[in-house]
Image (cartoon, rainbow, N blue to C red; front, side, top):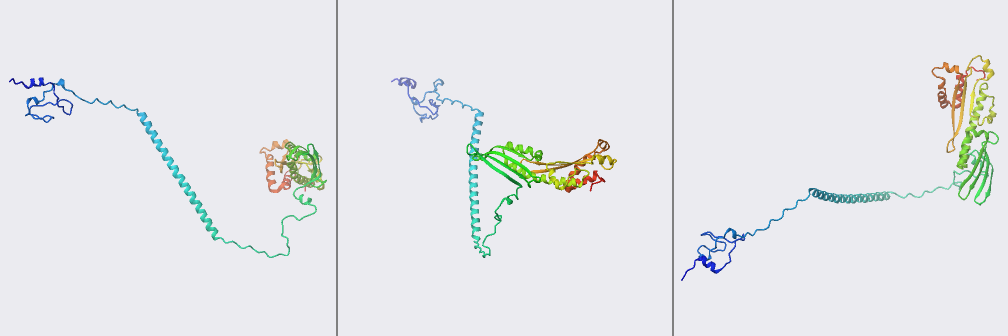
Length: 380
């Protein structure tokens, strides 16, 4: 019997299943070593593994993973910033919510405290008893109202010096328009009175003056003429009447003072008596100077051509209030001005203003007369 060698038997038996190790290729057994299949070296030759040729190795390896794609650093930073901003907004909302809750809590506590204080105050108060007055002999209660009179006109004139002599109106078509004519005077009748005449067309429905015409005494037009024109332009008769009522007392005071000065200094001013003060209504200026004949015979004594000018103007402001403006200045010949190197004569106006504030108009004028016309006959 022919005994086949192990190699021949394997070729005749055909391919056999080979055990593989954990790496996916066939186990290779060295002489005397234990294989992964658990077979020992004492097995028959036909159970021994055939040595593997390198070309027969089958390496089962996993394909390498593709490299991770690198991200843009700017995008990462932007994402972090957006995340931080969102967190900040959320924190701000939480803070605002907490502050609102604290404010509401404080307001509630404040209201509760006020309520408790008011309640404690009310509890400590006692209601006073109603006083009882003893009956008086006069049952009528005293009043500050003026006593009733049959003619209230004198009481009304206590606040105004205006007297209306004519008040008539005419209805114009349509029926809500009326033409009014008003005549009157300010002050005492016939003695320095300031006459006025007003004619206007008024719409009684709209309470508006559509047309206005007005005139005052001729001697008052120099100071009141501009203001009268403004009132006519603005169609304001009420302001015009208020200005007339405010202007007349000052004008009367000025005329009486001028008449008193004319009586006191007859050689320096025109001859006027105190009773003729009404003739000086509307006069604004007095010029103190020696008369022509007396100046010629004076021989240069005293003032020698010097003049002192007193100016008293009455101005009316925008609301109809009259106010005085008094000034004084000295006029001297040119020869005096050449000698006055320090301009002392130019300071007379400021000196008169100080005297006016301290002594009034009459006292200040007396000081100026004594300064420039001292020793003049007739000055007393």
